[in-house]
Length: 324
Image (cartoon, rainbow, N blue to C red; front, side, top):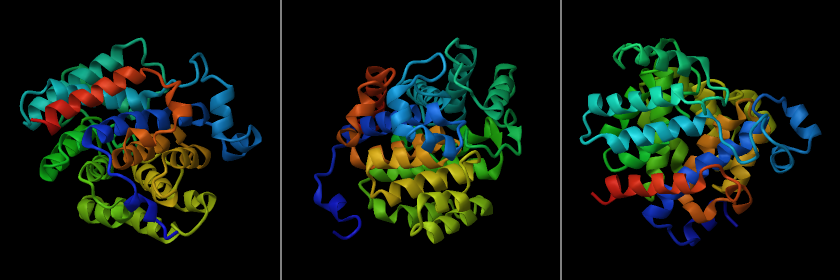
């Protein structure tokens, strides 16, 4: 079968199925990648791969199925969007900032959050405006990993998507690469809601983010070069995912390489990325936005932490932004 052909043959999921697919997709990817985040690829292989590790072990003091700070911060962004009564960037960032501080102070904030995220949120807590709270030069993947809800909220207003995703990045990560990658993840999710061809995702996101960060554009160019190569080779070229440029490029590689198969994409990310939870989470959210919640692997979904809460969050976002 020609690559991508089955995508065109399947029934298009409804928009609500795609909203739920995004939430469950990113969270399940996160939960599969979280147990292996700090393992080498050799250690993962010796233990049977990320799927075996997920099904046979816990994550430190947490049971299997738990997600990391990636999903926690995505939930915070979603709640900030839901609390905002307008689409004004300052109002939205006020509410997102408050949600970040609530997360920062929570006893559940014990999932190895990144230093840049924590530093930026600490600055917000101390009263700094979101425009100056971000850590200068912060180019980790923390801005990109949490931007999927912005794609759900503003899939039909791409200028607003770009504005809000950019703002959501700079409040913790003050760099152009962080802005570009947060915009990219939100946009790739939005394309799913818009029923746009997933096989054209690379060309589309490169055009949409062009001119923001030359480093991110270069990374997408590298991605195009390695699409024909094995994951092991591709991730050596793209990078392990600790930086935003690498994480989004790696996640998109996994989605494209697996023909937007959710299970295969998140396992490819978890098995091959260094920042396994972030790359698998971004990949899972993108695939879920295109393919809907029925595409989410049930063996991972049945153990997912807060599964019903994530579904409700997706439904609330749908009611506010899709049905308004």
